[in-house]
Image 1 (cartoon, rainbow, N blue to C red):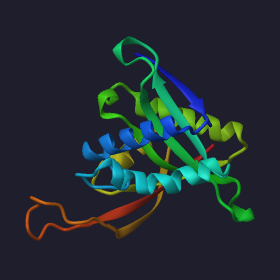
Image 2: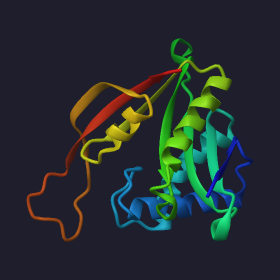
Image 3: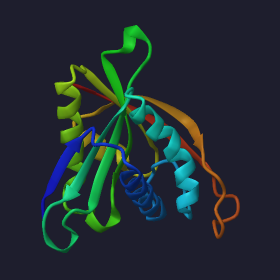
Length: 184
């Protein structure tokens, strides 16, 4: 199985719907992309509208990967957003957001390929650094370290997750917010 990446595809209504569906599936599989399960497509669509606005206005970028072979050919498999800074002194770096690989495609190395493509797109656009943050306790920081990112900060209890049904009473809703960067 292989991926074909496209940077800055036209953000049609169909692509927006595909992204919301992927984002919902990733969230409900436990992915740390702004939600805790269970979430509905309506929940995700509200947040997605804000993310899409930056792309539609030309401030931000989108990288999507589609499967090219087999029964899933043409299906959205991976995506990430690159958000720009409006402050002139930070214009040389962007923030990577909403990194996700659909659960049907996980375990195939697509996350590493997506992160390499995001770095290539940023580099081609004259960006010198990429920043991201991730939720502590997920192991995502280890993944990003393997992609070349370095941790430069950690905010203890920087995230307070909503309580979930069936969760052990008294379970801490707090997670560290881990800040990471990659020099390009």
